[in-house]
Length: 151
Image (cartoon, rainbow, N blue to C red; front, side, top):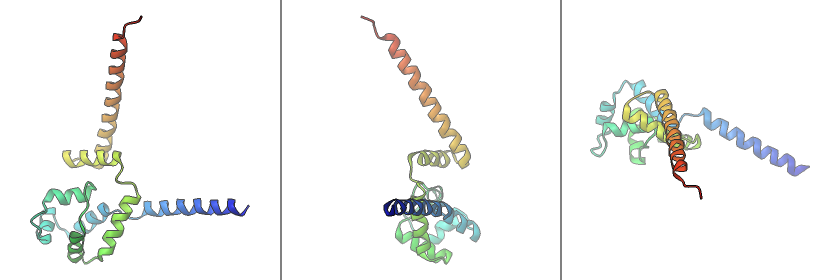
């Protein structure tokens, strides 16, 4: 009886941790929020970072979640925004806990990044891509099946 209660408590703890991770900000949200709160454009932030290896596209990728800033950049961002660097690291971990690195999210983010559209449009385009892929696969197998000669 005690082991059953212990297992239930472990399951409840896992669910609670997952739920709390969903409610916490990911690094993407934090970066967008801080930049807009300060009123910086991506170009202005890039100038403040003063790093010749970074481009405006890198900042956009951070904000979409295609890429994350390294630790040196996180320290510079914490100085610019006057936010503890630990907050950025925690937000980065929250992004991973939320599963934002999954393949579907990455496809959506690439649509958002390359086409410069909203996240909603990225979701619609991803679904459309999957539907078209399914239709093509179905057509391919039907075509191949019709070419098979019966003995």
